[in-house]
Image (cartoon, rainbow, N blue to C red; front, top):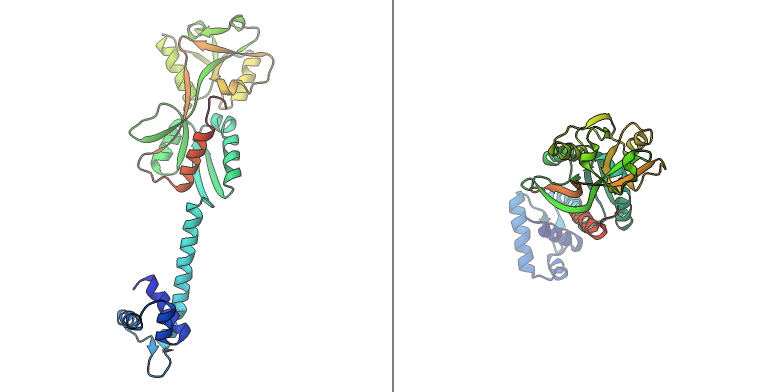
Amino acid sequence: MDIRQLAYLLEIAKHQNITKAAEALHMTQPTLSKIVKAVEEELGVTLFDRSGKSVRLTDAGEAAVAQIHSVLQAFEGLHTALGDVVQLKKGLIRIGLPPVIGSVFFPRILAGFRAKHPHIDFDLVEEGANKVESLLLEGALDMGVVVSPVDPESFDTLPFLYQQLALVIHESHPLAAQPSVRLEELRGEPFVLFPRGFAVRRHVMRACRDLGFEPSIVYESSQWDLLAEMVAARVGVSIIPQAICSKITNPDVRTLALTDPVIPWNLEVIWPKSKYVSYAMREFQAYIREVSGPQP
């Protein structure tokens, strides 16, 4: 028995005549009669009383028709729901991202996408990059935004932003007058940095250690604006992404290019290789490709 056969039964009940029902269904009367007989045999009941001139529902037929209406409505609802998803009328995307990325970059991304697809909802989880990757592999998130590189065996990636880390320094600092600063020149300086678990900190620590020194971290915070204020208060120097530097408004702070080495800060949208990519996710990825660029 399939969904079409159930619809055939309703047509017979409507016309109370197999021949008229067959005509309405554009099929022959013998074919429809065989279908009815097959369904009755499968159910083990007689659905129609054929003893008179018209075909009438039996008690079992009355009960069956009541249920068939519900089944067909549910089936129609299924198609409608799937159609809404396919046509991006509804959906949910769970995204994990470090707080610095969420506060600076994603508000405009989400706002632009929601303007096109108002019924696609987002569940944002702010965590460090390592935690985001773990949640993705556990299936608790659909997508994540992290600093590259990531494990290519575990994740598919979509490049999002290419930038570098920059030095944030007080205007009175002797190095503030230079157009750029070599990382080696910061040996012995007090640092204010993002805490452990943040990719920015990991990149800074690695670059310093490659030069043979351990940065002296005197203050740490997950909030970039608080780091900038610590620099303005002469607590130390900081190294943060260029895009965030453009948001700093304190006049006592200078932003300088950092060289030797240049520390890249490239963002990627990632998702597990084994994960099914929903219609909403595909559209969101396409939107990211459309709006991505070097500026936040």
